[in-house]
Length: 197
Image (cartoon, rainbow, N blue to C red; front, side, top):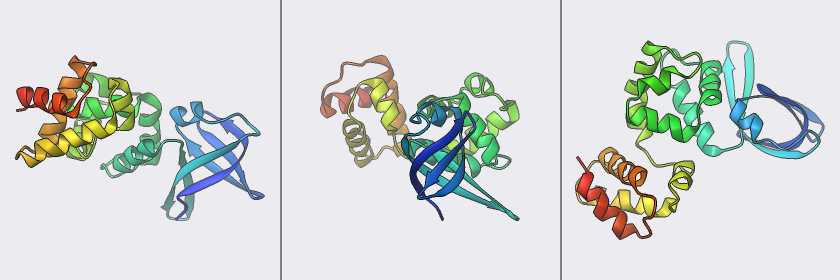
C-alpha cells in the first residue's frame, strides 16, 4: 500500500493533483479542502494517501492532514459511501464540523453537504457516532483555544471515574463550546463533571 508521497506538484485542480515523485507522476484525487492547503505548482508537497483497489482500477486519494484521511477511511466504511462520495463530503464540510454534526445528530448540517440526503445522513450518524468518539481532533482543540493534551487528559480522567468515553467527550465538548477561557485540566474536568450525562 502507498501511504505517503513526497514530490513536486506538476498540476493541481480542486479534484486532482499530479505529483512528480523521483520522475514518476502520481495522479492523486483530492478534496477541495486538501486542494486549498496544497503548495503552489512547482513546489514540493507531502501528501498522505489511500490506495483504493476495485476490480481492475487503482486510485490514489490524497490528504494534507492526517485527521482528514482518518475521517475518509471511516466514511468509506459506511454502507453506500464510496471514495468519491467520501471525497465529496470532505469537500463540503470541515473535519471538526462534521464530527460535531455526527455527535449532535444535526441532520440539517449533514443534509446541507452536497450529495448527502436525509437517508444518508441518518446512516452516517448511525454508523459513525461511536467511531467519532475515539478522540477530539487537533482542529477542534485549536477552534476551542485549548491544548489537545488537556482535552485528552480530561477525557481519560472522566473515563477512570467510570464514565463512558463518548459521554466524557460530549461533556467536554459542551463545556468548551460555552467557555473559551479554560486554562487547566482540573478546571476542564470540574466543569465537565457538572454537565456530564
